[in-house]
Length: 426
Image (cartoon, rainbow, N blue to C red; front, side, top):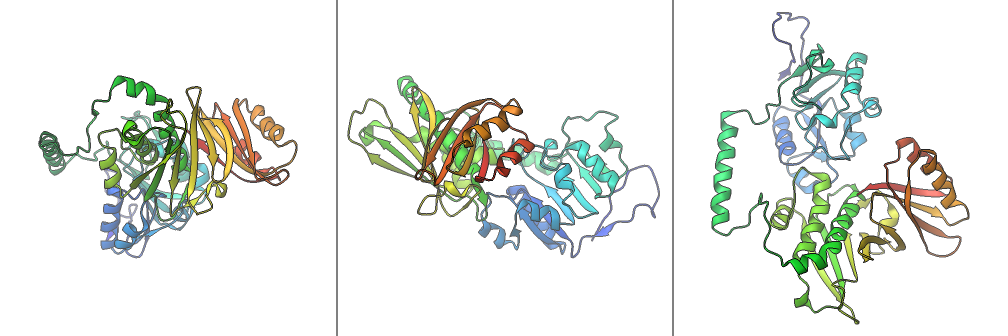
């Protein structure tokens, strides 16, 4: 099988010499429905396929002969890179000057995902430098791209006008899917794409509102702490409440935790109606547990705890004694707060974004980190330190209003007393 990317209107056979796909390594970036189908077809063409998706189950990859690897390993080992990831804050411009520098010289890139996942100026430089031999682009940051767009005009680029579903079969398939969804909804079946939610009494919504926000943000925090590996398969949610079980409907809270876990890593919008269906479709098992407390049932909940099992963590201190990522939160004065990370007690408002640092407990650490952030005009909204014992290990949680630059985060990581850190976007 030969891949040859050409521009129309010229007959220059010697100039457009292709390369064989047989025996080459393809990195599929984003191993969802589309990515896994691309992998199947590439295997049939004789390619060695690796994939990066920190949230994809490894057993699903193994079933079709694909190895899940880290992001850096995927881009550095591959001859071809095919992008199938959603555009999220974490994936925006994920291919940039820094990542292009890690790639094999002569790599070929196909982007049929979202334009924003590639820094287009960096791609032009990589093409000119010969790092990227050819690029095939169906999507752009701005669509339609300008007539003088450097990528569209580049001789090493094949561009198409976002033709993702532009086949007769695809259009027919969408029509059938819509009709089947309507029929299913009329039969009372669970709808995957419903935008409406069941009726929830206004007084219940008012009472649960801050806890709904807390639930989603705990889900977002927990999934961002996952380092990858086997993928997120199991999430355990614990509710601590003094109320009777019949007096606390957790459907909305469970849906928001599902939303927080899934939305940062996909393009799916999760709501009360489709949360359970979406979780099941992605192989995600959500279990719930209640801890009954003594005391006044005036508040619906004392705290919510979210645990993700069988995964590795970007921040080792977030792991509980039993080996799960664990975060816990409470509502204080109507505002969601993060109150526990792993076994460390903290207290930081879940507003803006958070930096977590594990450090040696010693004087001056708050001032040191605060000064680094202040030099870049990053406003610190909250700061809290939880420690095992004086002068031992501690975890510092810092709430920030703006996202620090990579340089500032590197400076924080370079502080000798800081053993690990992670930036989490809410």
